Image (cartoon, rainbow, N blue to C red; front, side, top):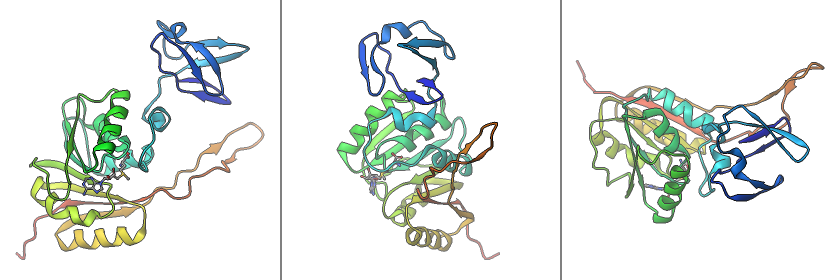
Length: 247
Ligand SMILES: C[S@@+](CC[C@H](N)C(=O)[O-])C[C@H]1O[C@@H](n2cnc3c(N)ncnc32)[C@H](O)[C@@H]1O
């Protein structure tokens, strides 16, 4: 990533000459051998060479279906207690952003099995995840996450599909006791429906939330919230698979 206080450009460095939108023609050979954090002059401007993080993934990939924003995806990983070695089942690859966040969280010893019904979305997600360098952890499967999942003893089952409640019976077969089910949904109607079904099926310690993220603009003259804020992305429901007992 080439960065200065007013600009940000993602450049794939392969030694070729590249036309970078809003920057111009750049010989990427110039960047080979440079270290992260170094400065470089391009034309009259100075840029820092910075390693993009998953926060910048949406700028790096080819867009397809609506993505889970990285800050939201990372919170899902947090609430599901995903860590190195976790076995995660995901429903709905879409553009592949959530898959990449999950791969980063479970790697290098865990696995992410992502079920996707559409071949074109699976292809898109695969090329995006390759670009983000996480193909070795990702197991893409063409199939329906509500009926086709083969893996068992999973730590987490997470879905971003229109009818997440349909995945709960499958999740119950695949999750280990005490594992997590999480759903990301764009509307409160979906949130309510999946929450209530989870509760009926014995999920416990449940949490439903949204996460409004607002940047601050900091300067010596005064600090204030940014005028630009993404007002709505989606809601999350997460809970532990509990065993029901009347004792
Ligand atoms: C909104 S996109 C997911 C985006 C993804 N979370 C991301 O961050 O890039 C939803 C995806 O779920 C897929 N899908 C819908 N129903 C499904 C099902 N029952 N099983 C598997 N995939 C499904 C759709 O084809 C679509 O690609």
